[in-house]
Image (cartoon, rainbow, N blue to C red):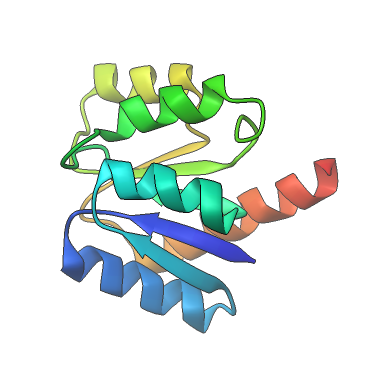
Length: 125
């Protein structure tokens, strides 16, 4: 499965990408919001791991745009962010984020959540 990892932190992108590649996934990376939208449209990932705070477009705006588009509405999204207060989490879930994880995070937990989302997406396809 192809996964898009979108985070403005090179360190986070490398860590997440390395773990997901070790799990057998193809991974593409984006460093800002506009690049994320472009890669969703050109690479057609099976899942998006998305930071909330990014340059050019923030994660919530990306989620709004993806969920408004019939072609990307069903794309599973894992929000991975330092924004951990209850209001932020609830806002993300209301927008359509499938999983909300806060930094610092466990790569093992992320791997399990990604696997579960991908299994659920393939079951409903």
